[in-house]
Length: 414
Image 1 (tube, rainbow, N blue to C red):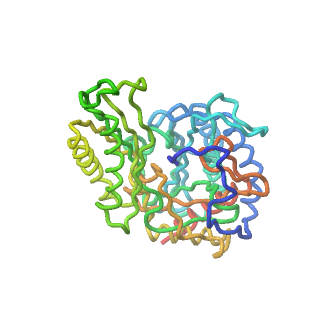
Image 2: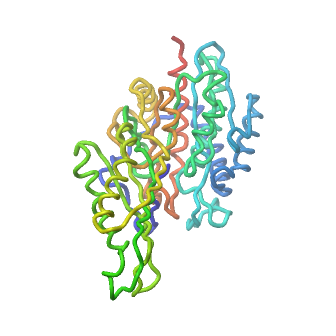
Image 3: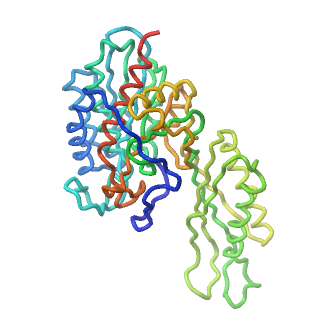
């Protein structure tokens, strides 16, 4: 999941307002797969790979899927893997997706399965997602007599950056056979083990990046009247941009605009020629997200012009909002309730983090859901993108049971 990094020192016990854990009921065949799940997750965790470099991960996934007798394609959009599992009866095709990539981070956990790759770490749970999906193939094969249709297992590279979902779609992953619905899950360390977040509608935000270069005219710090100070102009731009969410957008519509990097100047007494601002803007509203470039450009232009400066805007729209289909969310909810009970479901969770699962859900109905993976009593309390992130591995069979249960319910026959 693309989101701002967090430091281990700032890790809370759990997110404010996080619900308590719930009792868990696992089908016996799913519970029997726990050791296999854990072993695969730990192997992947120890050998993390960055986006579009997941060669070892892809090879291990493909090896396991071929050993099950599945049709497997590798090298899809560089390092992606796709497998097709046929149920015993005809019917639609459902897509299950897992992301495989790690983060450019040095792990600080002293565990036997810690990263063996300097500067690379699975700090967001993608190792768990991949292990769950690979093991789901085995569980679903054992249940294929119940399946009226097919399951397309999609192992995706580069969710963190630069984005692997769209290249997969452009490579035809939603075709041959055509996909009728899509599902995926994410470990969630803001929730304790035994809780699951399932909601219809917007779940995660659009994830856009922008750079504003403010151009002035350099000079001596003691004679600012002889210069056009881009530092002051940039400061006005930073403040003016906050009016986008406070004055230009309906206050009932969540919008976050953050300037996260400011660069300019080389000495205490030299007014520079340029200052660069780097930031992100996020919303759950697809139509509003499309308007952001024009709005930012207009605000920056006005703030700069007032001080005799000018600007350049470089805008990149990474991921659209992740929006769950109402009917598909209901399917996932029923599967989750069978595992954690109705009291274990949270249906109001939203986060302004981003996910390129959104590209799949723009094209086919589906649902993306969160599986609680924190356990402060065992020390599993650090947030995603932290150098001390880790999960309670008892979350793995929970995620597996819900994913398999979702497929069974969707392919139960019409």
